[in-house]
Image 1: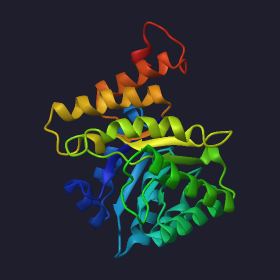
Image 2: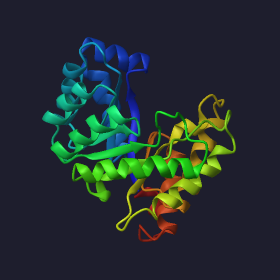
Image 3: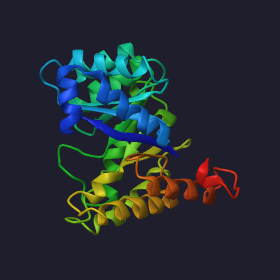
Length: 260
């Protein structure tokens, strides 16, 4: 399963200040720590980036890839900033994200086709947050249709059912499980699936938050999840992922699989 490290985020006080000052030190430190912990990609979240977004994203991508040989997940709603990052990215990037909202879907899917990037399709539409798995599937079908227009193959399309915090929408976790199962039946080959894992534990207190993430991940993997944007620095979360990967027959069992 693909792990996308979530920790390089403009909302982090320390890293946000480093981005503003174009100080590579804290950003490279966090990037290297996540890779060491097992991240396959790094999410670079610069938010809307309405001021100087293209230059910031280009700087982030080139700064990280100058020292770390890892693909990146570019996370912004600013299409110009997204393209600036894709233009300088080495290898196959992730676009985070398109949604079912027509203007955003068109812009981001066009970039995925142009740069042969992987893309996350978030099941959010102009109607708002889906109420159940069926509504998520309806949005997913629209995203898949747009992907076909731009020759984005199913193996590069990662459908995100949109995880809500259990503290405010407890029953919705069940709809997310069902959505993952249903997405896999939409096409052959099926699209990939992804979640922003820590959304489920938003507002939960420390200690509770970590366990919500860990158990939720194992249950999602049982439903067929392919990727998660999550915190690879949580060692117990990574052990959960490795154990589930053995039980899904993705990794050869050995007595030392947790240390691999």
